[in-house]
Length: 286
Image (cartoon, rainbow, N blue to C red; front, side):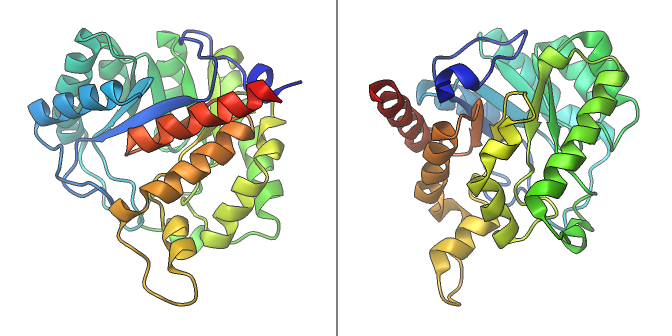
């Protein structure tokens, strides 16, 4: 089976003939790579439309930073940040995902036009999330997660990171399905950078086939993350700033596409849009 046929489809979302590109719009003042750049609603909507013009297939809108050590914002503030942007992009015909751990935000975002809920906790942070997603009937991203940002670095302890992530994701998928979410609407995400160090992230990227064996479409979110900074820094030098990791991100996007990922989530869309199209062309020529 080719990776194209094997990357899977998500019921309720468009089908693409290659790895899809999810562009990131952070409506936050403190995200690790672009906090504050798109904090204004008008600027955030404009940026989302620019990412679509650069090749994004869908846009992921988030109002709460999940960088290591980040403190949570309250729900009212998250709603204030996110809902107008979701509504504005959806009104322009954009396929919109909402990046949230809160059931109330997910519910209102879907009402405003979001067609996918991307919960980095996989429904663990808010017990109301799974019933909301099940009731709304929208697709749901289940990410591997071991705890909130304040403490997640201390949880990066594994004997076999690939085996443990697969096992924990399997358990979480079963719980989400038991909660009423359509299994054909599930997407899985290994959670690169969440309770994982650089070596563990690289091991997961090297074994995406093990994650695809779970039988659901795979989202890979490596964009600008710390492990890429460590790779680029080499022997003990300081890692380059997050915004200087886009070429490295595109490399992971190409690798992910070749490994059969359903989508990649990135801040800088154009390099990754080119990368996944090259991967598709090579795949088609094989």
